[in-house]
Length: 52
Image (cartoon, rainbow, N blue to C red; front, side):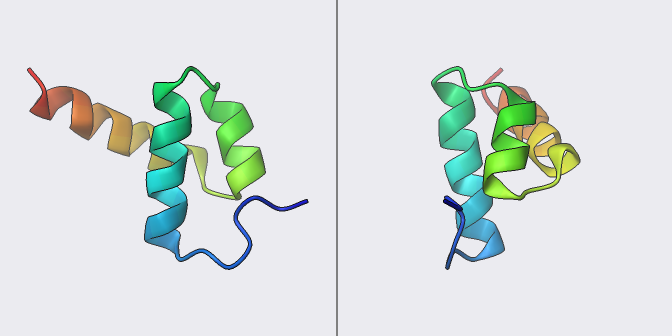
């Protein structure tokens, strides 16, 4: 089952970020959500920089 079926790229990234917040490894998120690992990593770094 594809968890990302029917979602836009932005929705996929938001869902991926939510999954990362609860401790799901980025490699698993990238595979399940079909989102490039670099996209998730970049967003996490941006979020970390904003929360400082």
